[in-house]
Image (cartoon, rainbow, N blue to C red; front, top):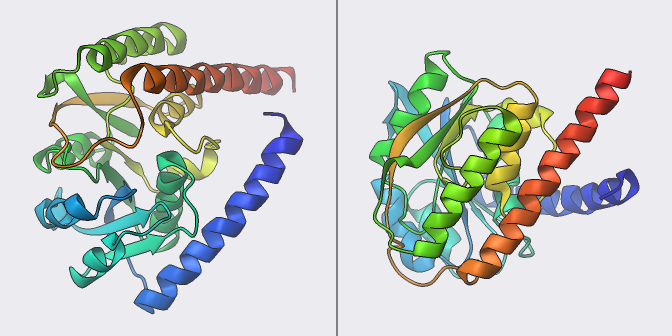
Length: 270
């Protein structure tokens, strides 16, 4: 994506984000988040989201936690479930992808009072007990970006292709970024709310690797903590089959790496 295309895409994304935030403020009147904000992206997850948010901790590392759920278009009733439970829901007018939804969630977190962001899945794959484990090194000042790792912990999923992909991409990330990475696609990650403001995040989908690679290659101190990856509670993944997912994920992975390499080269030239 060249600079002109990126500016055009950013203009469209900013318009959509603005409409979504207007909807959020109209529904909630005021939004004031706690120091810790748990950001969840949801797409057609009404059957899971109630149990997911009910299981989330009310505080992490001794600090009060808020929950922000970004509904990625085509609201199936999930927003009402979130709001009736007393949490913040933001509904995008169109479906763009998990990456775009998370990016909007990060913006809401940093603009409405959060000091730290922790992410979780909307489908029940995240163990709520892991959120504090991953957040702790960031709170303690040991890292700027902490990622959960199923390879350091455990996975209850028996998808051979998906698990093999985790091994392959983490090995590639370790070599390319010169940083030990064991899981590039874990849904649990933690960082200061301001971190994402300085990163280029323009992928609408498969944003886990974009965020991770961009953070490491812009100098963020990186660490990992063991987590448990659980099977989806109900329903089917919206990301397609394993091979299609792997191909698209790989495209984002490598394009992000080359983008960051070029960015570093331009900075050195200046």
